[in-house]
Image 1 (cartoon, rainbow, N blue to C red):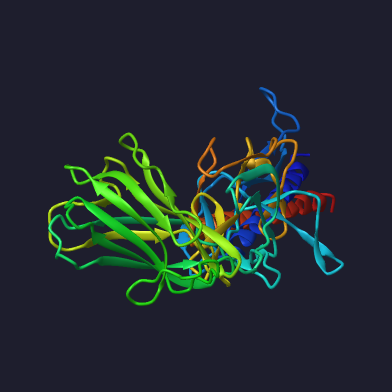
Image 2: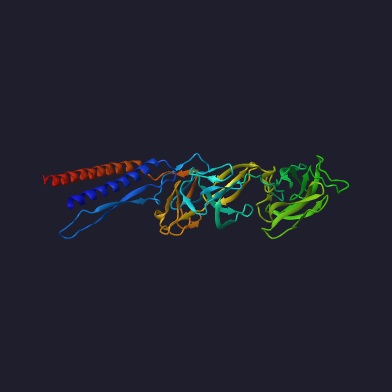
Length: 447
């Protein structure tokens, strides 16, 4: 009985070591697979009879020991859309199951993956090397508000960036306290109409005669097409003057008041004065398209503060900054990612637009996830409920851009396991041949 039991035990040992060989083989084969999680082997003893005086041979069984929560090495990638998770969690991905009316159809089952080698396919989806589609929350491109109600495959629309007409000009400069008499100073900037066409606008400054602390600002554009005035006011170069105003500075060199706003047509308006910190702003209109007024606010800073236009010591004009909020039309340029998980579309006009945010999904027991093809997983009862949140919050790992997570398989460790498994398999095989010889000897006793 013990010899037969020993043979059965050795056979179970062969089966167990065969399973171990299979896991080692799978690990080594996928040692270079992005986001792959290796599988170890656990062995358990099954008893038949075991008492204080008797111990019959039992059996051994092998079961997989998953390492889904073991971090692989995060390596820099040449793929600008590559993403890696440093810490716990998975990317939510969708598994394609075909197409409907020319559109990709996805399985309703949520999938999760650490394979972050994403690239944009011909339809604008972000897809990893295993063919899984990256999911994310949608983002309102106008407000930047993230819709966290549902995740869906991220699709990049390679549309143009619509032009934005200029509605705000901001000037920061220092007018000289001792300027050259009779010499105006000026600043130029390009502004945009509703079609995104650029137009040059000039701000001419000249000191008011007899008043060392007062200046007249003249707003000029050569492209104004307003036909209302019978005698258009022009500057020395023949460009249309849209309006003028007088700016007075206090003893501390900051703006004290605005006065005498004059416009060739329409109005130039602004707060005459106000408490320190109140915006010093002029509003004027122009017609880059005949018959259509475009209202523009000119910010000169704040009354009583030095954050805009000032009049400090000096004899030369010093421009510190001049900006406007108009945008020309733009064409799709590229897609970029951020460590927050934001996916941005970039345009050749220098603008960008966030279209989605990639969340991180965590599980209480990630080792209990069900493995699927393509380094992906699905949730099980034992894995717990998937928890979806922003990267770096509530236990979720951080997103590393321009990188991928390599397989967590250690080749050296696998070869060590291979040697042990090989010797164990050979020893079990030797036990079987030895038990066979003993049984044969028992049979031969009858002869």
